[in-house]
Amino acid sequence: MQFAGEDVPLLYYTDDDPDHEFHALAGDPQQALDTWRAECARAREIVAAASLEETGVSRRTGEPVSLRRILVAMIAEYARHAGHADLLRERLDGATGW
Image (cartoon, rainbow, N blue to C red):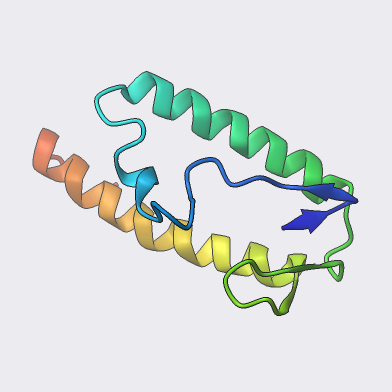
């Protein structure tokens, strides 16, 4: 994907190993957290330098996609996984609710 004139590389995906992200950082939670934080910081820089209407080309479909659409999809994805993380946390510590 390219936004703000910069190609944004994929860290773990390749056509040869599309599921690489599931095992790339297995066993090293601190490295996974550090990588996630660095990627969040870089994403914030890219979003700050771009317009929501700016488009890139989806690697999956080859179709144009706006930054606005990508951000909406990311919000939905985070919401789904936050619920999963909460269920896992409840199993670990037994606490429920707020």
